[in-house]
Each structure stands twice: as structure tokens, then as C-alpha cells.
Image 1 (spheres, one colour):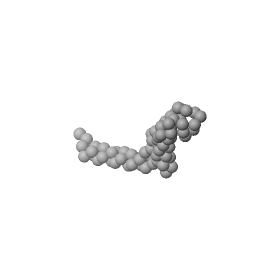
Image 2 (cartoon, one colour; image 1 turned 120 degrees about the vertical axis):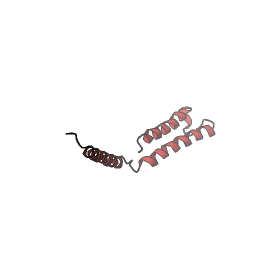
Image 3 (cartoon, helix red, strand yellow; image 1 turned 60 degrees about the vertical axis):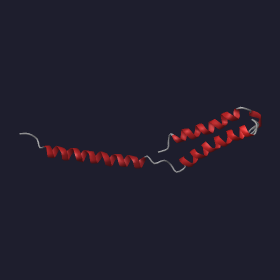
Image 4 (tube, one colour; image 1 turned 90 degrees about the horizontal axis):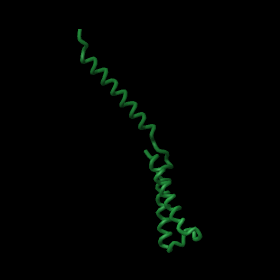
Length: 89
């Protein structure tokens, strides 16, 4: 005797509903911490401002005695911002 197609569809639909509920629950768990976005934006802006000050001051400031390493510091801030951006949900 053949199996009922209706029961099979109901069983599949019930399984899909369970998967959808699990997916919604997983999305709720993937919230970013409240400090992440402000810290990320601050790191981006700090790096940008650092590099702009370096160029506007004629490669003298923000730290006068390290010279072109000021660029590394500025890009370090920007890199930290990108690292935080990868953890943002």
C-alpha cells in the first residue's frame, strides 16, 4: 500500500518550521556588544585624523620625533577599526 503524500508534506513542513525557529533564535544570539560600533567608528576616525594631521603639519606632527612612522600609527588605528568591523553583526 502506498504512503500518504499528505503526511509526508506535513512532516516536511513541520521540519522546515523548526529550522526557521532555530535560525531566528541563532540570529538573536548574534547581537553585537553595545561598545563595538562606537569603538570601531572611533578607531576609523582616529586613524584618519592622525594621517591628516601628519600631512597638514608637513610630516612633523602628531609625534614629532618618529617621522614617517606616524603613517604606521594612523594605519594601525584604521586596521583596528577594520578588525572590529569583522566582528560586527
